[in-house]
Image 1 (cartoon, rainbow over the protein chains, first blue to last red):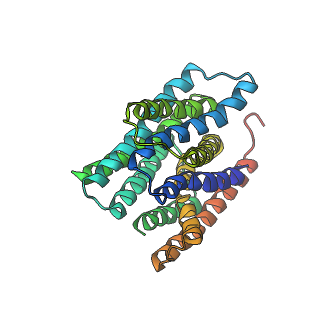
Image 2 (cartoon, one colour; image 1 turned 180 degrees about the horizontal axis):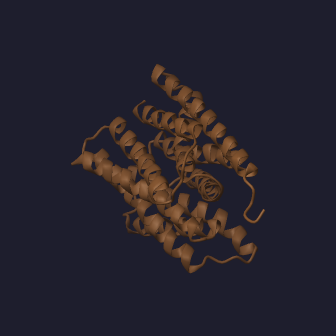
Image 3 (cartoon, one colour; image 1 turned 90 degrees about the vertical axis):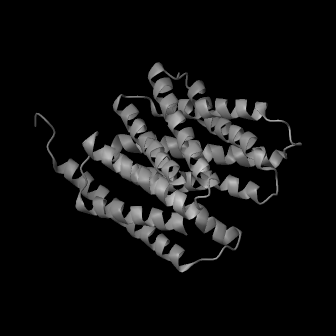
Amino acid sequence: MWFLLMLVILLTNGMSSFGLKMIAGWGLPTTVKYPYLTAWYAGGLAAIALPMLLKGLRVGKTELLWGAVAGMLSIGGQIAMAVALSSGVPGHVVFPIAIGGSIFVVALAGRLVFGERMNTPTALGVALGFAAVILLGVS
Amino acid sequence: MGLLFCFLGAISFGLLGSVLKAAERRKANAAGLVVATFAWPALIMLVKTLLLKSGGRIPTKVYVIAVIFGICAAVASLAFQVSISIGKVTVGWLMMNLSAGVPVVVSIWMYREKLTPLKIVAFGLVLVSIFFLSWGQVIEKRATASTPAKGE
């Protein structure tokens, strides 16, 4: 199950941002990103909400509250990166710091807040993955 | 000033991963959480779009592409949320970020982008990292299986 989930994450999350690259090559005005992102979020929302509705499941208060916090943090991160890029910091500096830093924050929270312990291969995998993410951002 | 925003971005995304783990600990339904996480930005982006002065007709293919990749993102978020209930949040979050290698590979194939030595090293590290993470998961699973349940 875990391996399947990791494969799904790797492929679907990787491709989720590819659309912006595709439309960037079509020579459309930069403001097209707003209707694009509206449809992007709405499409994702519908893909999960429709099966839930068909099964008679509802979104509770807990999900709405935590979802709101998560949504705001997601938008906050995007805005912070956009401001950094527009203030002249090159992409090969912005992406490694923002993405690598986020992994560091999650690893710290995982250990200190959620009490997650890693065995040696996992710790090695995280360290090498961290380096890979930085290199991908730089390249 | 720009660098400060880079770090703010890092903290914001890092807190996002941590908040999703905290929600999982509080037994939030994974699908419901993804719906709520997508609903708020969808609403904000819709308002932003409606406030924009119309700059001409947007081709239908833009919406088609957006919906397809939005579905990909939602499936990834759901898989991540389920994965952190059976595995570590650090590993799930790392996998979400390692996935950045996938569009790079697709770009090399689709747009004939150059495969630089740096990219080759990065891809190599991604593969080795995934190998170690999988190995670690196997060890953990074996250890859990060999630990007698409480009361036995």
